[in-house]
Image (cartoon, rainbow, N blue to C red; front, side):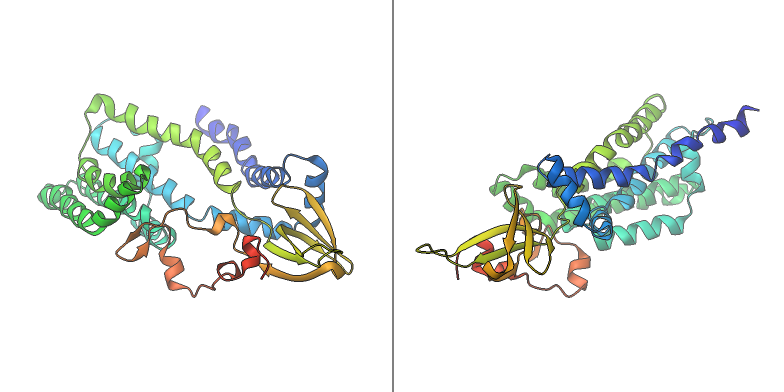
Length: 326
């Protein structure tokens, strides 16, 4: 009796899934308003729900394959390390996951992940392939696939990203250097079984920690995503005063007024007849954080940006986006 009732008792958890995106959207407006209730109500009145949903989707595009691939590798590692023991839910999920789904996740990641995350992707792929060989009992392929392949791939990665690692260390960007250099070193260690006594505590513990931490990481990522267009507005000079530049985000525009949220999170109602010019800027969130390049490619760019034609933002050439009059 407990078997059929158990899934039914867990159905309440599925009703909470739609609430998480709504919570993210509300928190984004709360942060954008500078924690002022009246400003937040103004944003709720004028910000389109589609704009918020689009920003949510774009900002979290990299997350699903990262979660699924990491969980799959940890589950596979637990499975080959505890062979003969009753499978856990994580291990059962791994056994039921088809190969085409993992292939799709890898292709998705290769397109949307930034270049700095590709060493981690290659590490996960080598681990998944090696653990798959062990799960299928192919002892003849253990040495070439589980040992030689990850070592050869790791050496190739270090040769490719070596100059970028040195450049990152020269700039003091240690996290970036570790992100590029650590996965090639860890790859060969993830294709073999762990000791039986520690396998499940380690793998399932990491999955549990990830499940608890991931919602907070998603919130932190989404709170930095732009949901309103970033603009620079040039105003007419007042009597005896030079013209001024207002930097901020456009909330709404009507026949008489342009409502803006400036960089100080202050709402400004600007009469349209006082506006000389407007410039669409790229905003702080779209400016690359690191100048490090790997073989000529910025480490913060993704293959999707290379494949699609990218428009040059006005902010790269318009002095108004820097707060200066032209």
